[in-house]
Length: 102
Image (tube, rainbow, N blue to C red; front, top):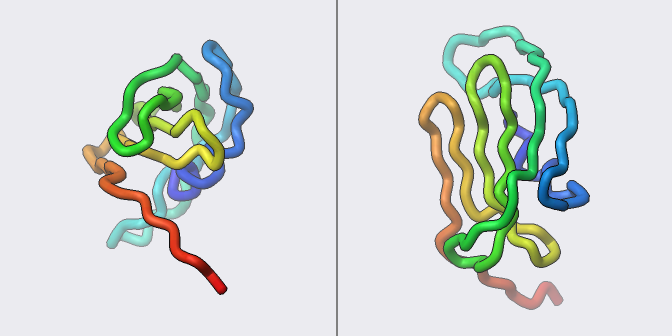
């Protein structure tokens, strides 16, 4: 779950794509809970309009512990525009900026 925003950007996005996956729930907690692996299904549900990035792919990971929902820009490099976790955590992209590296 913690790595999903980066790993899912490499998907071959196409509406209706379904993949069985193994999901390790978030390790970011104060309890030191051992990793729990769940069988889950990744589904690219379709397209939507998303803030900042415009057209995006709607991706849902359906798992016994609750669904994870994401929106990834259709354009490369498929920036994550929005996410929502089963435990109520949410993230939303508010801006994108690029600076010269050299």
